[in-house]
Length: 427
Image (tube, rainbow, N blue to C red; front, side, top):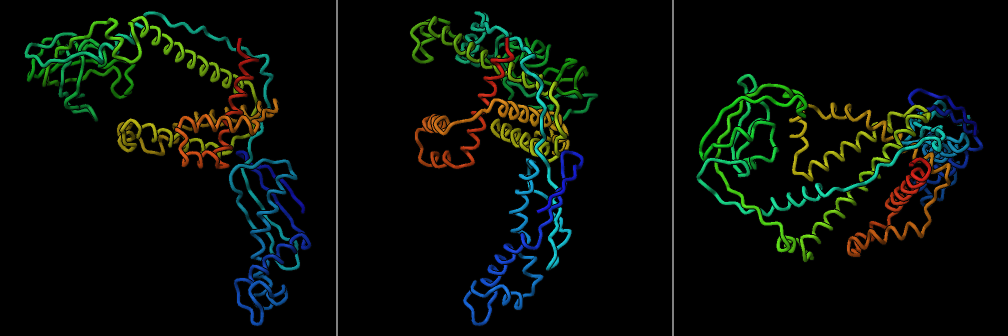
């Protein structure tokens, strides 16, 4: 087999593979045998007619054509291995020459897994930030728990700060209703600052069944750019006013949240939870910072469109899943953004490239460190997952599939790489 390699743009190569007749011969024999099983040849049981008889029955060209696909499937991976190339995705095959008695020539265009020239990351230092949880943070969580347990009573007096109101509202820009700018039966606690600044203050003193109209300017930093800094008109009807009575923060309050005897016990648990969450966020920050520095200072071959397209598709699926989990339809989300699906894909491209490069540098570090996951480590991780699902036999079957095991190996290897990088880069 002769292989010529031509480098193309955007991370692709073209392999021209030439198979001499003697190397193609075994594929011809297998193709003839397969044809003899499918085509009735008088005097022979299926699959028993020899090559010459099959050739007389269907023609030599038919046999050569039938042998092509198995030949490509076998020889293309061999060509990659010979040239020490790692491909991603399926190749595009063009037949250059397929004529009986002549060498078979085909071209395979394929994307390559980009190679990475790692920087000396031992010279890069990322400073860890101390994890400190203040008593004020604990107080905030405790206050939120207290508000969730508040008792509410419908009252007839004007609304005050601290009350909950149920409202219908509409928002107008230049006297035209804005898209998604109205809502009915919206619950709002006055004074918590959950609406734009000034809105809640306007409703203090308004009674049930009263409507109030007022102008209000959206903040310059408002997340909807078309509204940021704009002066809008609001029409709000108060449909109900509820006085809220907060429970006293004492031991009895704490006992309502499980196995806590005292308020001090609950505070300790809340602080532990906040500390754990803060430590997790700090680890995520360190990992992102390390990968950003590695990407910035390492050199990459061209990233194939195939990898970027695959990553944007994955990001889109993740977004759809998250929206579905929140009860939001993807089409409604696009309508809210005033974008099409294709627009969102383009928006994702820079982040997709970053994610691809992160995976590439992680893989490169794993190779330099000879990071391997033993069968014992793999099985222990699968057992942990199975325990979390209560030993469900159906789940166990899924966890033992080659695809899932490969996924777990990759995850565990990535964890090992991160642990190594933190040991070297974090100070």
